[in-house]
Length: 138
Figure 1 (cartoon, rainbow, N blue to C red):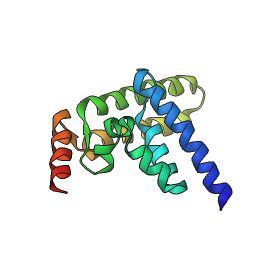
Figure 2: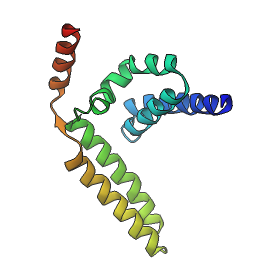
Figure 3: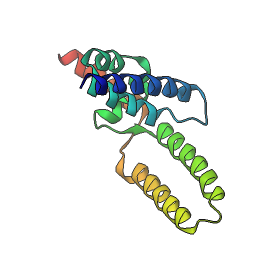
């Protein structure tokens, strides 16, 4: 059990690093790495999970989604564009593998549909105001 927790901590730390890079580099998406980090820290250490949940990186990129409120339009577009570009590279490289192209196209389509219709779009200011109101009510 201890080895499993250590592996989660290591994977979580790597994910935070990649997520931080993704927050500043336009081609690398921050969201999936930060979501993976949150998952890993929740499985490994309550202390690490609490620390991560209180970072600006988490609050700016994941908090509204994790709390079920949705994502800003800017975040959704950034994720969809990044995934489209990366999947396009894989699609082009699979020019001899028809099955691979079909699978990749289906995954891409599901991804786009999920972010368009499955994830609620919120305005950037909406979530901040709700958080402040919740904090005042406690």
